[in-house]
Image (cartoon, rainbow, N blue to C red; front, side):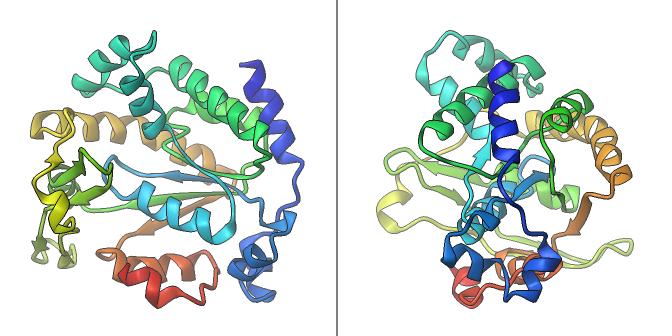
Length: 273
């Protein structure tokens, strides 16, 4: 816990340029190119499992020049390491439960410590905080500039999660689901094409152990119950940006950048990558 407090205080000392201010100076992409301390934003990405937090947070981290720290990745790395927590984590994940605050904070503190030794500052947190307790810890030790809450229809979320695949050889993440959901009860039609792997990866695709329909539905239910207080925590502080994904990356990426007042001169290239 002490390392979390120390590292986040250190990161909080970096200068921050708000999205609105960045827009007046040509966008955060220009600042990233200048590689100045002003790029060291401290953002949080919220959203249900499978909504795309990792995809969008990763793209933004490259654009603004800060590390993307995904607690889900930290958990999976620990699971693969056969470390002291791996068996306990395996039982939690396979049952669709959320990992405890203590374990997440321990993994996050270790990641921040590694980043500090490499001279990192600023961050985009993905998957943390998930509870009000975690949010209060984070709020007590550093200033979060913005919290982006990505939202997507639950029926689409389920299809996305069940379509996720990973290449066992290169580690690439793909999605074989072809989603074409018609408008229902005021919910707009949504089309999301599959993100297919190259031919050499096709035969090496594996499914995550926790991506079964039963586990995914349970995970979504638990997340929805726990996320509302966290969203309200940041809403009261005027830091919550709720963004409804209109479709896949080509439709959603430029609109997300617009909502964040960020300019990306390679926008078209990023959207179709």
